[in-house]
Image (cartoon, rainbow, N blue to C red):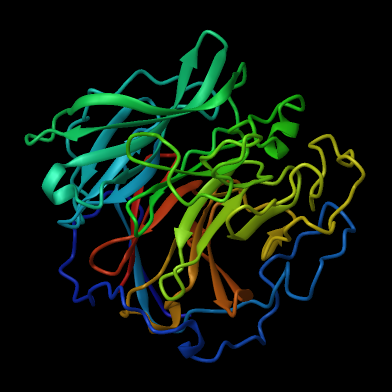
Length: 411
């Protein structure tokens, strides 16, 4: 593999000739042939002897990028970054877990902390989480974010919105538009990713809060936990949702049976919604999301309790419950993710890139006909917990880590 590695540390930007992001990416079948002669990248023993539902569902053949590219640390000055949104001018709007926003240039220069957001509970896995901008940001400068909010009954995943002031020092008129109830006294599994669809509605991911007593709420259509939701910018259920008009279900629910969804992305060629979610001990998943479908947690899983005990009836496949397109055992600990739609590295076109936490790398998945056909690990030398990865306006990938680093990956 031909890589140009820059030394670790804060680096000044280089003037690089890169191709612009092309949103009209070619169909996924136009990829160069995948070299499947490499061994699977996972070499550790699995936690279970569970059998996949189909060939290639886990431990697919390895692939290697042949195009030369460069990775460099742009900054080490972020404070527990969590989410990235790409601004129209190419800068990055980044959440910091403690409750502030920062803007980073493509050279790694950081703004002062942007304040004005509601208070967050940053204990455990909580804090200021995912972020996205309004499709009409250039006209209205509206920003949307998820965060863990305190309530008398406990904490919950909340969605806020507000206007980025012209001086970019504060968020104006911040308001909470949605709360994923019920609240629970836990600081785990908030989900927290946000994504606008082409109709201007907002997809929101939630977790089931990790507690064994809240797990069943993933299957409960009258609870917002363990779900992918679809709402308006006012926090109401988006029209056309699969449970619209049903008295026994919340109309904002789009899919259910999830554990802790921390990655959402649209496939650039098909427009399909994909997600990733944490399994327990084994069983991290990538799913192709379809409206109204049940993705199984905690009824089916490819993982174990952290104690090593089996979960429920130790069932991995059941009629009526969706199978993951791909799963990991041991876990990747997947967080933010993005599909690559640039053209500067052709072999990456329409590939899925996932930030790995405990796995301390970025996973590249080659997908063809909705199946994973190859996997590669990037930045394994860095030993960083990667929290989010997004494609910039310049066609490069930008990633943040729990340790405060901002990376650029590209030509």
